[in-house]
Amino acid sequence: MMELSERQLDEIIHNCLYCHVDGEGVHMNRFSEGQRRFYEAASDDYGARARSSAGMTLDFITDSNVLGLKVKAASGRSWDMVLFDLLIDGLLCEHQRCDMLERDTYAFRLPEGEHRVTLFFPWCVEITLTRVILSDGASLKPAPEKKLRILVLGDSISQGYISEHPSLCYTNILSQRLDAELLNQAVGGFMFSAGSLTDDFSWNPDLIIAAYGGNDYAYNEDRNVFRTSAQRYMDRLAVKFPAVPVLAITPIFRGDDRAAARNLVRDYTLDDADAILKEVYAACPNVTVLDGLRAVPHMQDFFASDHLHPNDLGFMFYGNAVTQAVKNMMDR
Image (cartoon, rainbow, N blue to C red):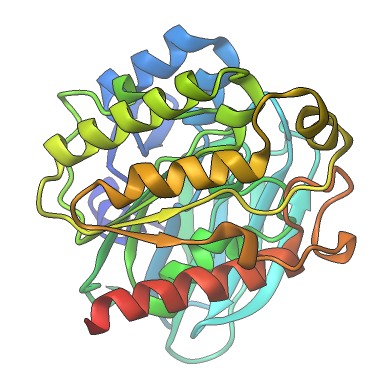
């Protein structure tokens, strides 16, 4: 068997801000050091979620007949499942799930001949690569260079909660449809917070997706606080990325009992929050709005049991809506 070197891995790891290597293996990071400290200071849970491998892939061309992984999985504090999706020439061909973080070895059979191999990592836990193995003498070429870079900022839905197949998170559907390098900086449970866009975070996206608001409404009983936090975040985003177009997605439908209760006792409803966000976005330069309420059908069939997060079927609708919105922006 042929073990890939650090240099080879660096060429085939995608949707990652940077990697660092220590005695444990190759750590893939989607946040800068300053951002990680920000989330860790907010709570241990946020810190763990920020370390998850959401959106990251191995993407390469090979004639190997096997792909082997030796990994270390660390808890994401919410959904401790190791989920891998293997795509061959863009087609989902294998899914592996393990509920035991202690399992450290995974193997995938590859078809005969040269193919593009894309392996999606779990959105819910942190994966450290200890070894990546191909067949002896196998060829290895990086995937073709991607011509679009997308930065995603958001909460649990954008991180991937609660998708069974990581390749079907709406962000990963988007990256596949547009063949884009996509850096997923969503963190489950988080809200508009200008402090998350730290000075040391440096990446050059062609497009930004901002998808907050659901948790902000859940935790802010005062509509003015809700509005102010959204405004401050968008102001900070405009300063940090002054010329980059932004697709701002308003919250999707939610049918959980807590949301219904809030609508009864708050002095502003989720519909009011949606209207506030649209007012804030209308005042921002370079921002296009996607109405999240129209992105996923308002039926339990398209949601997980919490009636809050889309299931894989709901994510397919959401991914289609976001992809079309991005294409419309690019065609202008």
